[in-house]
Length: 508
Image 1 (cartoon, one colour):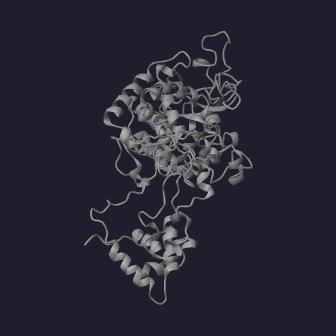
Image 2 (tube, rainbow, N blue to C red):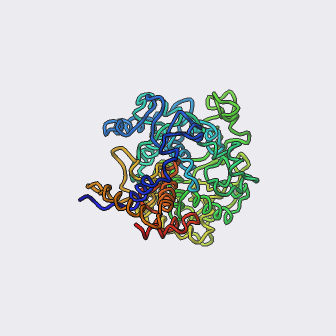
Image 3 (cartoon, rainbow, N blue to C red):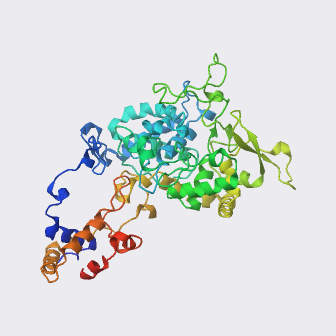
């Protein structure tokens, strides 16, 4: 005798057994117009019309993984003249690339993320927040060409971010491989700016965008680092940070760990007030050429003459070392507004009243309004104090938050492949192990048939339950569906469309 049938199986069997399912186009093999929107790829199945574009976990062996790690690590310190590495190391740049590829995920509809690798295409490619990330992709191009279909762009970008953290001494929980590369940026049009975004989720005043959009400003990953709508208001920035990171699925601890952990590395660029030059829409072959510095200089528009965000400086004195110094400095000093060479507001440290150190000992660092904001919110401030006092606690919190940041769009744990997958995390909605014995579906069918032939008959209830249970699936981040039968629990069981289904549960 096999296992008893689970509710999800029962609901599906009841649907199939019911005469109401006979004309369903999904069961009869017909295809509606929605399926033809992007005929080149069926992301739910993970397959492409062109078999050569298929990428799956079978190709991601331990040997491939270790060889990739070696090539990525070698790239970090191989500074190239076309885009010299800050501090002689590309690792911070690659963290930014991985963050921006993954960090546009939004909970509202599961859109965004690095599955698809759409940061290579417009509209994402041209976002102001992604300025100069085309150079990071160029640096990865030789590695992608070497490994071909053995690694997707989405996996390569994310793995490179992991290795960047690891090589600078930071904590990494694991790597969820298995991303598929899209052929274009169609699936990012809803993120904006686009006609599709304006039709579905318009933002009347850019900078005050609301859900379902994931960001406060279309074209930025999270919030405006200068402050809400460019106003240097730390308290208002803290409110915006909590709102926007919440739309991305992050709680307070994850938010603060990611901000401070990410800002342990690298610097920001705004060497002049003339900007980065034409973006990929206006100059698709050579975007953001740079406008800062002497035009006859070998480093015109790059190196010390780089313009990326318009801010200029670095968060820590050791931007290639993982530690909690960001939090220590943020708490130790008072912060005073100044302006970058691009006339954007940023903040420099001054001694607090009663400080024992001298002004000569103040580090040459800069914070942005979105950093100082952490001091203006009680919950954020308490977390900053905790992370500043406990390096091990920060290590654990950041590793888990980074893994969540870079894996949320992959959906449930079962989609992760590779040899370094972390244990199932809560955000992946892990399910119990599948039964080793198949359920007794014949017995279940017989029982269902007896109910269907009873008086009164219940086929409509069964069809409704199966439909409501399964139709929650979304192909953007592969969440929902009847696997797990979460329709039994809040919030799903309390949805208006599910009222009355408790009658069907009683029949089962």
